[in-house]
Image (cartoon, rainbow, N blue to C red; front, side):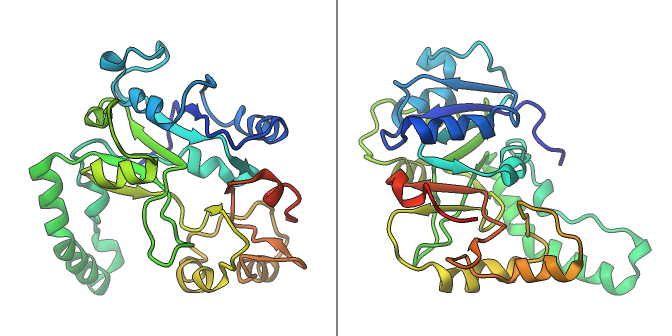
Length: 267
């Protein structure tokens, strides 16, 4: 799949951003997407209107069928390596292509056999998607929690595929609760470990070692360029955070409950 061609960001107000954090957030974001819509009255419930602009009547002359929309909460520090997240392609509703590995005889019999085995194992997933015409919702997985789950500080979707999520009278109190319970489809995760939500000073090192480092080097998306493979490898295996090394190079979005907790976080 190709990257998003016209990502549109709807900024979701949380009440946690400061003037300083908002300015820094906007300065990183402005050159990475096609359109940014900011209205301080848009909280996560109001933002549900962007799943179905016809019914909700929200201002959306910049949205058409197939527009890739990102609902992005404003309590976040963005780094320059967030571009792959913002431009991550989202499969079309009902598509089974992400769960079908194409094979060619140029790789030889052994590889072809493994691909066939993988496709066979994924067959039930493809069947469910086809039978239910499932849509895709792009969001991070909360790797830092004891039990990984959806994290909806960022939610992205293809307009027209998720209209059932416009539920203005929902009784859920958080977006995490709402999407976890109401979305019936395929969770399409962002790059693993690239997003984190810092609500306290608890260590995240064990979760990082167990769930993120094994995904490297394939998923590694550093902020900087490195002159040698040794430097690249050393950076990849550094901890999630340390006073000596700062925040791991891979992390590109840091959500917060209090800006002072992350404002001076060394990189």
